[in-house]
Image 1 (cartoon, rainbow, N blue to C red):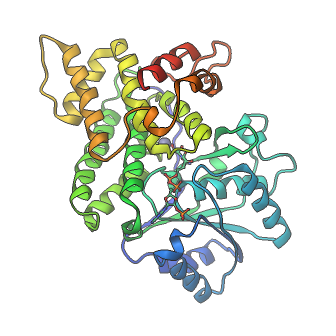
Image 2 (cartoon, rainbow, N blue to C red):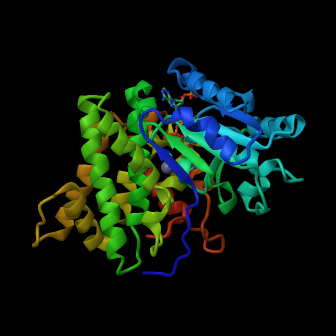
Length: 392
Ligand code: NZQ
Ligand code: ZN
């Protein structure tokens, strides 16, 4: 195990009928004038907007609205939000929606007190010193932004998609009512399930040895996701399955699963450039990339791939041929994604081979000197290109 410094400060209020607590919670955290940030209208259709407004009014909280966050949230709206918060003298942001709305809110929150261009935080040119407090009402179990220290924003100017990870942007509190997710289209539910699975998966594939507790924790979360995804395929209004999936989404990415180990995250960096390139849903892009990343790297540590196959997917171990077991694990994950209706190839998500080189060239590097991405097996741009070719 490697040393770590772990704190997750986000308060989670979880369960059926919890949204009416929003106003009182905001009051508890001394909010007075709040930016109500949301997306393209799903919260008006499913009643979440009305429930939030009613709760804020009952608590005497003033709210001004900034709707219009798109999936793969854009920097241009973030800048609009920063100006809006300053002009309106707002002191708190309530994000109501999914990862895109929450990430947009976090970007606004660090931009308001900053004199420069908020994009500086996403290129590493500046580090946030402070932020407006952000709270969330989550409506899709997916990105884990409701308890994460990340915000991922797409710069409309050139289509760069970049993450910011920083302590200042953990939400103060998040309300998670699994019933809000009943209105999700099956495709979005599946994208969310894929994404949360990969958050654990990226942490699981580490080169750090003796990480037994977090191995077992990661396996428990991945197995719970698989079992409850299957239940949701049968019955999308199964409350208990929705609740398990929603809590998995937060635990997958609040970084408890990453304590004492160094995760990989190359698949995420590759996917971010896919979604910046053609606006594909993040989970769908991951479903294409991850099994091909596995095929590219598995020989680097066959025992870990065997452990994944056996413990997560229940593959019977072939003691004479570990490689065969490893490959069956990769196949099992591919089949799981297919059962959810996720795409398997880049051509299915509209990415052509002529674009591979440009995409591979844009991937965020973890090690600028060596020009590599990912930690399990640091990948060069040439390696990324090979993975894209495997995924075509
Ligand atoms: O815009 P609205 O109308 O709200 O519709 C959304 C959107 O079209 C819809 N939706 C959300 N809740 C719904 C609903 N529709 C019906 N009923 C509901 N209850 O779903 C669509 C997708 O929403 P989005 O917020 O984009 O989904 P998700 O939560 O998957 O967020 C994806 C974004 O998060 C980033 C991704 O890169 C992507 O940009 N990520 C953020 C992370 C973080 N901050 O920690 C980590 C992740 O790895 C990820 O990169
Ligand atoms: Zn993700």
